Amino acid sequence: MRNENLSGNVRVKRNRIRVLLALVGLLGAAGMVEGQVTLAGTRTLDFEPPLPSGLSPVTLFQGTAVPVSGRITTQYSNQGVTMSGVALIDGGVGHAASGQYMLGGLSTANTVDYWAPLTFDFVDPSDSRSPALADYFSVTTDRVNDTPNIITLTAYNAQGSVVGSVSQTDTGNMTIRLQGIGKFKRVVVQSRLVSGGFGGVGFDLVTYGSATSTMLLPQFCFGGGWYSGLYFTNTTDSASSITITFVNENGTPMFVPSANGSSINLSIAPRGTAVFEAPNVGSLSQGYASVALPTGVVGYGVFRATVPGRDDQEAVVPLSSTDSASATLIWDDTRFVTALAVANANGQTNFITVTARDESGAVVGVSSLNLLGRNKTALTLRDLPGLAGITGKRGSAEIRGSATGLGVLGLRFGGAAFTSIPAVQ
Image 1 (cartoon, rainbow, N blue to C red):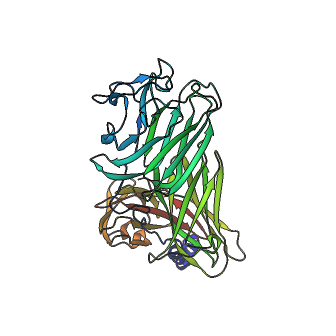
Image 2 (cartoon, rainbow, N blue to C red):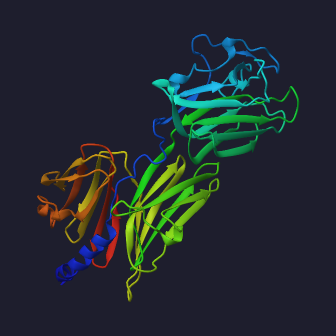
Image 3 (cartoon, rainbow, N blue to C red):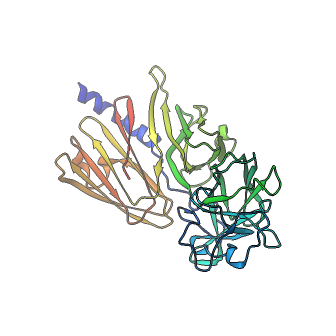
């Protein structure tokens, strides 16, 4: 009887699989400016020895003359940043956050000036003549907190327009961050000092680069009995924001009524939580969501199916990274049906091999599919050519592409219930 019920529900399961699995690829390098690179990863400068050739610090007192050897300009261009209005200061052991050396402002007369702004411009580490972009920047103040000075970081894009800013009152050895505001080319650090020549703030541990990762909720649907939600939390002590972009299965912008458009920006307070929901209203719409997550922000997706006369069914779905060329998931087709969806976030065709193994590790079957750039496919695992042999068995499936950019999602269906299968990338 159980097997008969399972067989009788095959059409229902297949229909749910078709509804649920509209997995897609990443939208590409959103926010890029033509001719500019985005710095890969983050890097931190502590300004302790060994210093770049020809660079040496000056004493910390306001008005100290700063020779060429004490001015930082292009010495760190191979690290992706140039500076202007910046002096290298010897604060004495234990004064700087990293130890002894830190940064101070430089007046137009080339003297130490703690009122003066410090400017950081990002460049291509392989060619300092070419500008670059970052989406994260932070500095740490010195360990001495003489007075409640106000520190402001302001980010600018390549056109010189303000992208965002943040201000904090210095508490000594304090880190202030710019993140979750998109990409920027320049950052200006400005101190508003309470006292005159004393109480100046030195800066250290300058960290910058790309700290945003793009993740997918491979299936995003609402209406026709379906609800989708995205949940996020900010694990940092600084405010942040995320941008969610919604896309139809054919790659066109997807209008989501609850977002009043095809994208939405969510602000998240320090240690706060944000939720975006697309309720079950109207006819079925489905596509996918692409999420730009700053460092320290994590999240997941939720599907909910509503069928009259039955309890609602939900599945929590992990966001899928597109940084990998492979993924492995565990399947069980003894009494269930496994669905597989694969997205190619790469701009070029990805040649994909799916290898299924049973519990003993023996190969049950091998299949292949070619996904064009930005394309996706969704199907029942056992329906892939060469994989019919998984029926009645359980094991694992390795999905391996010819290039990075794969987003993978698995779902298991049994009777009226379904659940997600995490893909390890």
